[in-house]
Length: 78
Image 1 (cartoon, rainbow, N blue to C red):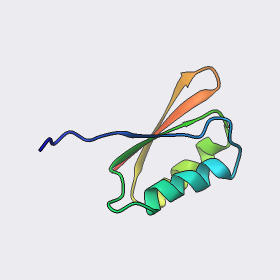
Image 2 (tube, rainbow, N blue to C red):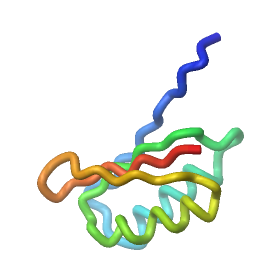
Image 3 (cartoon, one colour):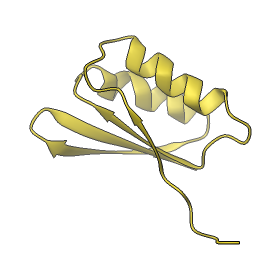
Image 4 (cartoon, rainbow, N blue to C red):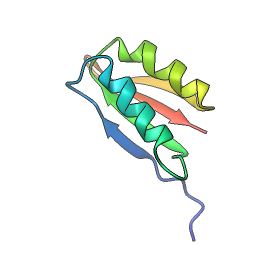
């Protein structure tokens, strides 16, 4: 059995608020066990201010990286 963490990916590019946050919350809340890491890809700037606080309420840390012009990866981790 490997100790490596698998980073899961949720691609919400093309979706506008509130859907990126709703889909992220569903991924974090709806799985047992909850993912240890989740990368959320978005091209909707408001998601950068809605997803991190919701993830932090659930005990996740957050890093945001611009991966292309107008596209970001929100890295959530336990």
